[in-house]
Length: 254
Length: 230
Image 1 (tube, each protein chain N blue to C red):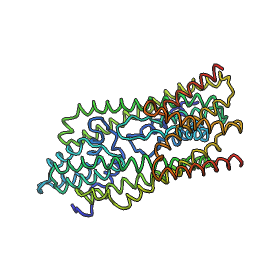
Image 2 (tube, each protein chain N blue to C red):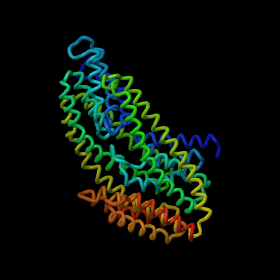
Image 3 (tube, rainbow over the protein chains, first blue to last red):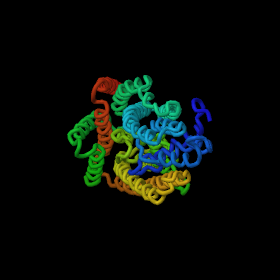
Image 4 (tube, chains in turn cyan, red):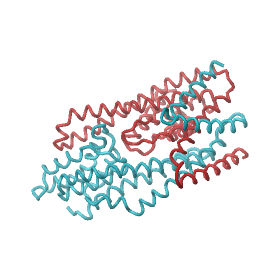
């Protein structure tokens, strides 16, 4: 097996990464999915037979180790899977591999949350909502899915390759200029797009009368302020559900 | 509605629910997408899209972060999109308000169901712990498949229940609505936009992003004025 260029089982590992949260539990979080995704790469250990650090026993020990507790953003977990699998096939000491996995949990979770959940996802959703406001119909859905998933799939591919290439020294990948620049850019871009999309929807909604537009806008601002005041006691969603239930009750009992 | 159409709605909801956590996390379960697909299988993609767009505003508040509890929008939006499409292209604000209440509740129930699936996953893991600890690849595959099947069943059941309950509630609300219909319009978009505004402020209300949010909002108001004038 060539270590530096050829990653064993890349396609299979990549496909399995899409199911990394399938067996999610509160005890091991992504652990089972992590080992499932790493398995095609760890097979190299099984196939290496009698070579030092290889063989079926080494493979099984590595697989068991990779199934232990792990948690991170599901897309960026690819980086940890690649790095841990590489460290295993390179014969790194088990305690070092476990330290590596533990050390990646916080940074990968935080990075993924900021980059994807609080950045790229709202940005793509805002683009789609703007398209809806301008009457794009099905294209809005198509553009949303393509735009979002180009980055999603790229992150998984990049993470797996980069993790494998870096092995135990994967921490350096998190400091890559491209990733840091993306982090700096994604929040302002998402803020701009979300800021534009929300009011624009007032011009799209099929109101029956023109006067409803400013009233709905005022209601939205008041509601947002109420949600801010109730912060920590109830989520906006709970308050919205209760509000709508009351409105429905009033509408029927009028 | 034919049995095949009902099965298609269940299928869309199941896939959308599965997407949130289990596989492939490609945002098929976002309200905009699931609502559109739910409407499309009933023959009203635009009604589904409109419903999904409103639910997408509510969904801004919840980020699917790791072990936290968050609503599952996919099945709720698929059922809501299908229900909106049942009106045959007629936009009835009261019908929509009824759908929204049921969809919001269903999203929360979906989140609770997800926790149950995780507990069932843990029970299966405990039964196979020895195999997993001995590095048995087949045991890992069985756990993954078990998790996917449980999640798929959860999402399909949730879609079916949401659709059945939603249809009754929406029909009841639409028939019994006595207040001006405009009240329902204002309440639905007002609360949805309010949740989204609050979420936008929480996400982008600090640092450099705050200025961009303000600039975007001004641009959005201008766009809305332009759309209304057009």
